[in-house]
Image (cartoon, rainbow, N blue to C red):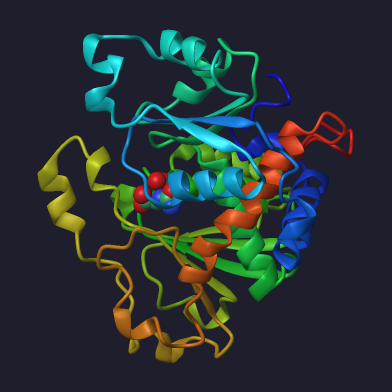
Length: 314
Ligand code: NCD
């Protein structure tokens, strides 16, 4: 795989991740250091699935770096409606843009698309696969709130279809973390992901649970996710577990005062709004971190002298 495409968090070593997060922190402190650094750069946005945060924060990031975006717009008004393939679409748009951001409902779509283009391509979510740029802002938020080493994290909800979970879990194996996965049995992590996690982290600190209760008091971070209704082959299966695995103020009574609650958003009913005003809530801060983190990623990808793989170990 070419190193200037970002498809999965498996591509990133601890050194790569720290390099990105450190650069994001510099930008967060003083965005003027990079303003206009990428004037005249155009980022191509190809979103074949709904998005608010990911798309708008990429757009904000590119504009804050002095560049601009070209957006394919809704699938319904694009040539995809006429039957154009993803391979053809990306080959056309790479002629208009300096880098591409692709979100697609099919797992593996970003890998396939990246094989057809020479400009850097960033995976903004491929079905139930991966979402590595979300992981970078998740890690940034975890580092700010709890630190990335000696971390005990609970990841709860739809672990089967949740691509943010898959990408985050792989990335966390680079750090000294204990990962607790909490879900109904039907939405457990795919077995191949569990296998990979054990391979990546020796003596893997990985545990699976069907209830939050037993481990909540030990957690530094609780990462809550939405049940991915759109990925269920059968709506009845969704209805069976909808509404489970919610948290409210009562749930958090058993938690440490320092617990950080995160969520990639959008939430449906997983986190009661009463938690928003507590010191636990970090999910809006997490969404806002999408801008400096994506600015850092784009700056590294688009600068000849830097690159995301700057430490030379990938
Ligand atoms: C997530 C996604 O699209 O995977 N959203 C996001 O990018 N912040 C999570 C979700 O849709 O539940």
